[in-house]
Length: 515
Ligand code: CLF
Ligand code: SF4
Image (tube, rainbow, N blue to C red; front, top):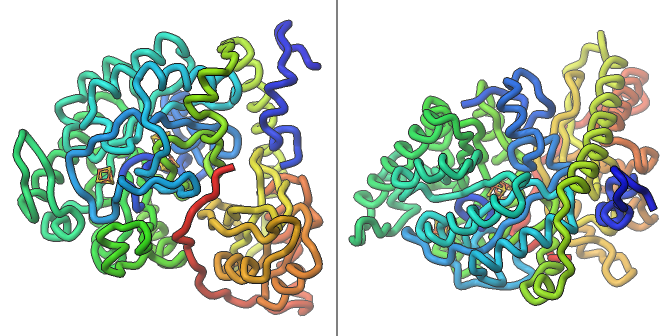
């Protein structure tokens, strides 16, 4: 057992295998200006020390942080004041993972206890978000009461709020008074004509509005709220759901509008739409975008503004690293029986250890980047990575429920998204059908990095033109991606291989299975 500041931390370290070197209602609506260096990019870059301090341990506001730090949501806000055509909050399934979906609704007191329980057991949980299952500001008393209780009992936890923005201008002062440093507003349009196809109605000032009139009020309130928050120095992220045929060509304009009002980060998410979700878009056959459609739009908006590309469209009761769901470990019943010991010193000691490991990841990447200096090439490709976190390639191909996707070029390895899949290995056996869905999900990638892989999936991937790479097992992702890229260039130059462009890939519409 290891002692840190005289306290035992062995139990806590076991909670995150990644750190030992092995392994839609999230924010904003479901369905779904600052400058670079956060969001999708890694590291402090040109952020001011004050802003870096606010984002460095926030898994949504810093792509680099999301490999190391966790967030949790508490589902204290059941009501909503608008209707989005991609939302159906009646749907509740413990195997479903998209914003708005939740298993238990909590009182503020239950929520505060749950936060303490999670903080005691997952010391890398740094952020509490309230994101539903309805709209937090349509349930202001429950939302703010929860934040107040948590501030009193767990002062090191950052507070985060996600809203559709309708009531935002009315609560900006309260948000500021409670030191809520991070606010997400879901803005899908600035043109009410387009908005009328997304929002059938809103309920505002005790009156129901419909169609273009409803969308106009909503848009004005969202943009006003955004301006009021950024004037007060509160970091704002804007989420937009990309809905092909409805707002896909309009989102570049939304990007400009939110950037000019001071938004720090823009998160364009794919529509999640399947008939079984019972949403308007699911039932009328509106499809979600493909991986390349989404990436092309995100790329086109990435100028002076940070684009978030690592959003997992989490549930309103999600717990854990982004991409994992540990909410089943913290049901109200279990939380009530738990021995809760919130200890700030243990949490800080653990996080110092995380920071050391994080610094090692960055240093290794920078060293590897030096070996590419002077290497000129137009070649760029994408790789998929199986990881359990910690910035390492530490997951078996058959166990991966998602792959992280990096774009590699002479300028570096950049996180550009993730692909959710059915894990190939089910009950100890490989599933041919799952292999097909995995291949469709990473079809735009040249290689897949895994810690191990069996012969059958290896052959299937090679046949599909994707190289399985397990020689970097347990190594750092970005460093390995760059080393692979350097070797790849050498193989192309020697004529050993020919560089081929890959096709498009599917974004999965189904569930992330809770573990
Ligand atoms: Fe939650 Fe949202 Fe705060 Fe993050 S989620 S309230 S900013 S703590 Fe994050 Fe989840 Fe995406 Fe939201 S991955 S849905 S962006
Ligand atoms: Fe659903 Fe309301 Fe959120 Fe829209 S704002 S996605 S209707 S909970």
